[in-house]
Length: 119
Length: 112
Image (cartoon, rainbow over all chains, first blue to last red; front, side, top):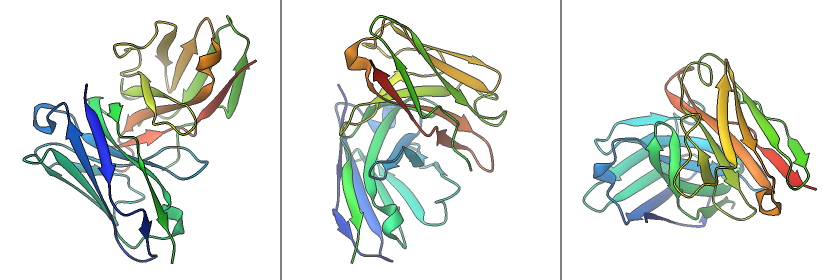
């Protein structure tokens, strides 16, 4: 069974850049022909799609976040990365990475990592 | 872009059936068979229950089924059980503005 694990700082200062990694085990990013995703959930609120990436490097981003988001992939390490710049308190959320089973459908999810934006 | 529209809450008694709706537009739900449904218990990661409108991942109970008509997708849970109490989210592939994925606002299911 595939396992995904997010990692990165739990606290980020306002206006700085949030950086997270997602390590995939039990399966290969390269053999999945769909787009791997990042999804976040502010405390007490709903799910918000951040963006996704194909193993070839192709990306798709949430239009409302596009100017601040960069998603990358390192197939040699079987890892995804997320960078979100110029963060504010509104970016405080649990951030999940997820593996696709179809277009826009995510089967396996990481447990999520809480990132708090605060000075 | 606006989220897909779901009822904030639904409820049902054990053994009953309930349906959760998810309304979008022709640029998302109505235009593509790429609608998914997720179940989320408090403090847990979302769990995929339905993808591509009607498909169930291996291990998901057949009590969960999906359908779509026009711009509205639906999740039906039959034979309600106490453990079905959770938040449910729909999502869809969308081509409004640029290709992306959009989620619904979520529905809280209460098993009475």
